[in-house]
Amino acid sequence: MSEKKERHDFTGGPLCLSGRNVTKAFGLGDRKTVAVDHVDFDFHEGEFVSIVGESGSGKTTLSKMLLGLLNPTEGEILFEGKVRDISTARKKREYWKGIQAIFQDPFSSFNVFHKIDSVLLDCINMRGGRNLSQEEKVRLMTEACSFVNLKFAELTNKYPFELSGGQMQRLMIARIFLLKPRILLADEPTSMVDACSRATILDMLLDLRDETGMTIIFITHDIGLAYYISDTVYIMEHGRFVESGKADEVILHPKAAYTKRLISDVPKIHEEWDLSTVDLLAKEE
Ligand SMILES: Nc1ncnc2c1ncn2[C@@H]1O[C@H](COP(=O)(O)OP(=O)(O)OP(=O)(O)O)[C@@H](O)[C@H]1O
Ligand SMILES: [Mg+2]
Image 1 (tube, rainbow, N blue to C red):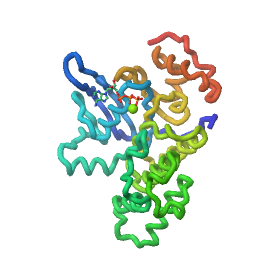
Image 2: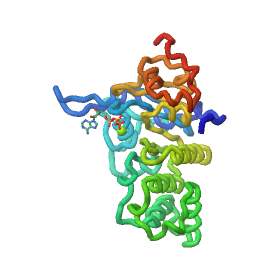
Image 3: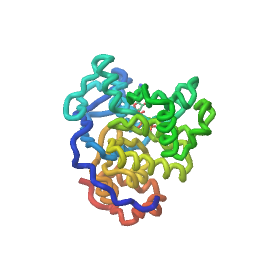
Image 4: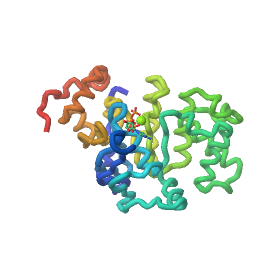
């Protein structure tokens, strides 16, 4: 995983999700926290975007607004160029057909009382496959499991809590493989796996993007990972984007003091990603 692969450039495609002045404040008066503070962004179809920032910078709050789980206190979110309307339960359901998420804690994503087959069958049904033959359904589930190096035959009749953390995360990616949403939001999806499985999972996400053209929004505190995996990065500090652009430009030629600090705080990325040429002393703009 030390070399960045040559990739198709998705950054000039049609707009998928955009934000104008998107803001979220919690609490009032002295207790007010502005978790996301007037951010603008344009994510394109098929683009692999990373949002990078330290703990508490507002990443999860932003992703909840993108998912429609939290309402912005100010600003607007545009979906495919139009102001997003999720004002009714029906419109929200329609929106959720196009956007899916993988969360930090995979255990929170599954209903623990549903066996793994039914978790995967639900995905097939949601994609309109309810009337497929049992054989075809098993074929699709087997294909999704093998995409993430899991064996479907070993998983049937098991409950999610009988899997390891890493297996659960791979199962989540198998779900996404079946659901094929237009947008995938992944909030630190590799936090529970070792470095080797982490590289595999990230490669799986890249393969998914290449195969389906889905837009992937990857939330992380690890700027080295963001460099490796993304087309575009947005660097978030105290609820604001202090810098954004193509991953290579932002990370190899950082301008904001905060970006430089994130890079220098992770010395190992200099070896792993050969960022030794990064000019940390260049003048901030
Ligand atoms: N429901 C809430 N009520 C009040 N404050 C909140 C709420 N959710 C988040 N915050 C505050 O908003 C800020 C941003 O939190 P958020 O969870 O978005 O950060 P994060 O970047 O995802 O951090 P981490 O990397 O630790 O997951 C923090 O100061 C947090 O305390
Ligand atoms: Mg978070």
